Each structure stands twice: as structure tokens, then as C-alpha cells.
Image (cartoon, rainbow, N blue to C red; front, side, top):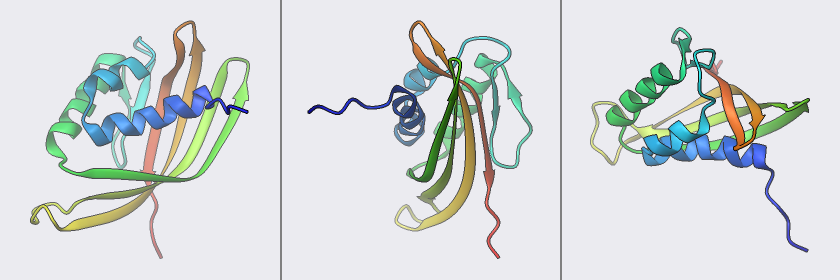
Length: 134
């Protein structure tokens, strides 16, 4: 029996793959076009619109060396062509101002809203925030 990958989870994983690989073309293909898309980076104000969101990721990708996301506690809820994915983002990245072999870790929580379109599932909203330890 061949197991088919859930298309919602495939789009969700592709989002993190795009960040890890600095692939702005892939990132662009994952977002729902329009001015009503929204992205909230950890500790930042909402960014509205496809173009502004892509510019924010271009800046992020240009200023981050190595970054890896290990996603845990992934949950999917669906209703009428809309899916909500929540997860914990366990992040490993180069430590700022350190040699490339020094890494820092962190954790965040993310909620993504995806919409089913004729060309597949697209991100409508991504909201990520830090998890405070202790």
C-alpha cells in the first residue's frame, strides 16, 4: 500500500523548507495572493499583503545563515476548504555574532491558516511567537 502525503502538511512543511534553504521562489508559491494575507514574525507586528510578506522573508533569508526547524506537536483542523495547522517550532540557528560553528536554540509556537485553491493549499496566515521558558 502506498501512503499519500497529506497536502496540507506538505504545504506546511514546504514553508519551513523554503526558510531553511533560502528559497524565495518556493516561499512565493506557497502564499495566497492578495492584500488580505497576513504574517506575524515572533515579536513583530502583523505584515499584510503578499508582496510585503515576501519582502520580509527575503530580508530574513538574507540575514540568517544556518537555520533548522524541528516541528513537534503538529495538529491539523479542517473545515470547508480551510485548514489550521498549529505546531511547536524548535529552532536551531547560528548564534548571532559568533563563529559559524556556534549554534543557538529557541522555541516558538506557530499557527498557520491555509486555504484550498485550484492550484493546491496556500498560506493565508502565519503567526509565530516565542515560548518563554521558566
